[in-house]
Length: 176
Ligand code: AR6
Image (cartoon, rainbow, N blue to C red; front, side):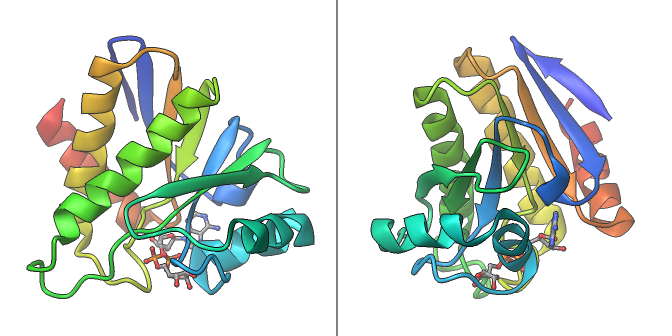
């Protein structure tokens, strides 16, 4: 499912983000950029050791911010590593931090002149964010960005399974 906002297509698909051919894919990393489970593990496995080497040189990334490495062996030329919040009940600035993770990834992509970017469902796995709330924030942030910025032609949300896809699709329909 997809819809256009200003000059940007926002699209929802199911799949494995490591297969994406967008200019950049986004990694749901941790603040030490140390690698881990979930999508982070999958990206480092598929991309090879060059990505971790660059992560070590960068050193870390605070929650809500974003940094970029090359894509190693991936089809995507770049990986944008962002860090979503760990969900602790919703009173620890989680919403602002999750929104910032999307916004700062998009800003970085724009600054580097990239035209397409794929996001996983940041914080929706190990970090425990309720998926409906996370989907709403993710989509709202991307739509606002598309309305205010040109340059990125495609923002794709790559959802790992049907269940998460269905939640994103439900929230998307409420907004558009
Ligand atoms: N493609 C797309 N989505 C995926 C893939 C994939 N290959 N693999 C998993 N997902 P998570 P988080 C989905 O846990 O919650 C790591 O250990 C998954 O189903 O990867 O932000 C890091 O190092 C879920 O919907 O990220 C951090 O320590 C979504 O990606 C921590 O986990 C995010 O789940 C970050 O936790």
